[in-house]
Length: 93
Image (cartoon, rainbow, N blue to C red; front, side):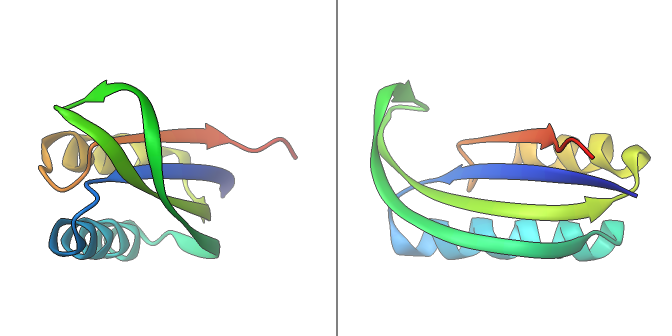
């Protein structure tokens, strides 16, 4: 099991945010990822347009999961319209 930090950018409207967050949590559960920390960072301005949005709702997770589960999760996140961007970063041991 590896430890990862994952930051998501969701659309700022409440419905899309909740739908995207639920999709992320469902994928983590499906992959068997253990969420060790999560933090709602709120709505922030973006430095550049992302899918025609100027603001996004930031959400941060720390998870532990097997390395072979990250790519399948990324494929689901890429096609989701409720997720603007995300970034997986492996934490150093």
